[in-house]
Length: 392
Picture 1 (cartoon, rainbow, N blue to C red):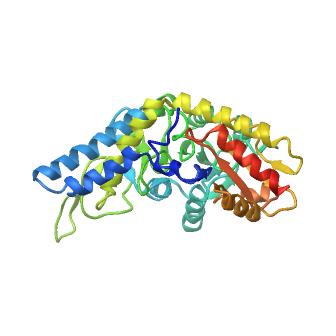
Picture 2 (picture 1 turned 180 degrees about the vertical axis):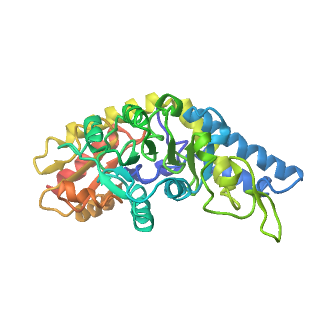
Picture 3 (picture 1 turned 45 degrees about the horizontal axis):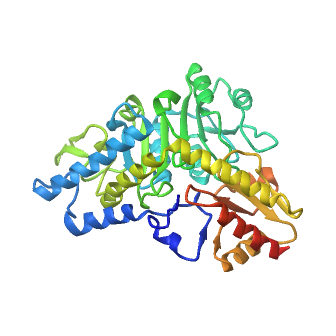
């Protein structure tokens, strides 16, 4: 199957291997955004006139689709944010800042994205919680045993990426959550790298909080999702207050906030982005998330097979069954490699990939990262191998 007609950027002389940063956008998503701006570009949940009502309906249609996509029990458990980072900050500062006390422990790993580390660091400075690290295995993955070993009587939260953005390991989230809940521990899941690539069932996994972004799964930038169990979200205090999220306030400072989900959605959101996200979800559903996952795993195996023929290529996660491959070329800086690939029309990520603490474990400050999606092909992999051959 070819996707060039659906993705205008694929018609360019370009190979895009940076899907963990953001995905390309299909024509139907961009057209849906334009349709909003050109034909009914009113605000949401503000006006009583017809085009405003259309906006309301379409925003809520997307919310319902998101709920169905992750199998939330109802759409009120879906909060729109501007991305995974805001979703995590909302959970940490709106819920856990009021839930945790000094010396309570939060478990993370050194492989987490900055968005799942820095807010916890800030909370540690503000209220004195203790951030502890779950040990990583030799291949930089997380095991249930290591999670169990890290838990103490003071552990109140485990906050982990389902799939990490550098190693790409798939954590045993369902088992971790089951263990945590037996001990009264809440779990926060960074789903930025998993929701776009795998079928996620929040009820089956019994997830407390899940955060992800639209732009990594064909949707527009500036749209994110916070899923939470309704009993937890009802105790989450808004960290942004203003228009749209209140039912009443007066000069005596009497305030009444709206019910979920609106009390956590202050101000005007990215309306065009939310509405267009609906088409991105439809596109993924039509392809099938299981099909997407299998295709990416098979394509990575093909990539690893080809690159394994070169003795000077170091692959840090070649055995991880996921669409992310992190590597370096011996005797060349990662930035020089990425620059050379770019001159040949191949886009890869270079650096610490917003996971700077991981360098303490790997012992390398900068790597090249290839992250695949369903529209990448074996032909593109072969072109990459051809170009890397010239580096040798």
